[in-house]
Length: 493
Image (cartoon, rainbow, N blue to C red; front, top):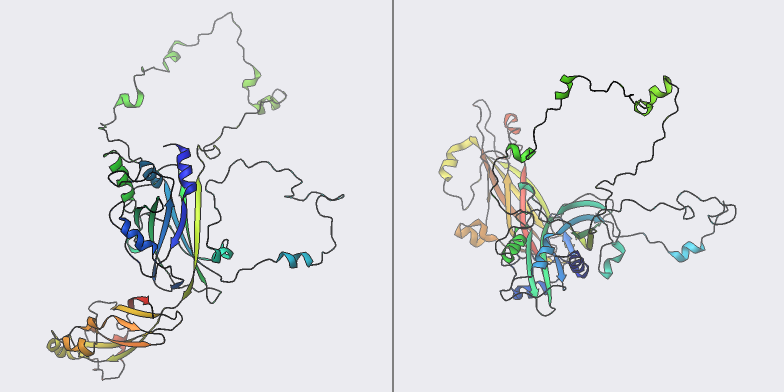
């Protein structure tokens, strides 16, 4: 594929970033069905981002300068090759909602102070960096450009804004298991507009950070870079390379050479068919100078310090040697191209979470009756803590929230937590059936969880009474960390 075709496809590609209210999975088949495309086009982008949520962002590339699908519905080879060279980057940061603007009219009205004449007037010397002093052209151009990102009209003022970086990563790169992301890819043919649409899904956790501004904006910036060589094959990028393999009828990908049987390296593989020569064989025959000939030993063979100190000879004049261009200074056959798109969202707290604890000797949890008799016989060896998890809709977003599940985990061995249910869930002995919970604006739910764990007591330790503090020997063991994971989503009023 020619370089001009790649640049033409890149220059005609249009970027957009979608952040729908509810995340959805991309189609597994490639290319995806056209019916799924209507679902993407009909989504309404959200204007709010909630702290501690997992936000799904979808980068949509509109590629009009490629052929339509073939009879089997597969994309053209030049499009797949273009996608193997395309690197997608993602950056999330908190920026200030108020940007400083310079008013040119007010700046022109400010009085000028007396001082030295500006450059260009008689008697003025050219300053450092002045345009009057010619500058040499740069030898090494920037390898990867950093263009001004494209934005919607309402976000133009934040085009060059900078703030506190939250996340930055390359789509499709392998990450540790604890930082695993859900990167997905899909490609769909839009028959109405006669263009291909490549969709990249990226998930990012909106972590709460302390900033100097009270209500920061969430800035999401995606960039696409056309590299010279295909990217490495990862699980997220594998569908793209599978499409290329299908077009080439099982041929290897550009990053993988053609398989061939290579045996162990031999002597001829390293040195070829060169004849072995003994370079020290001539020392055994002695000198071979002719007796009548004069030996020519010019002074240029003597070191410069010996010429100056021992013979008082002038230093040699060497000719300037042209510098050899290094790989970093040599220009590449095709410049690296980059495009970017930025979108801003307001941030707020979706709902507030608080926890209160009460220490009790024993609690009978409704719905958990398999080992009640065994736990009663445990007596003073058992400790129970009742956690009150308060979930409140603060009303900042003016939307209702639907809590789908709440998971309470306590660190330590043998600790378990059970939800104390009510209503029909209590009658059915199924605590999890109380979900989902609908929280309207300024409403609050209090969920009670019984956390039990066994603690071996010494015979001399006193038995704690109801409402009393635990014994000093066991207080260190009862200091456990509690994690509360709430899964929910905003919903319309």
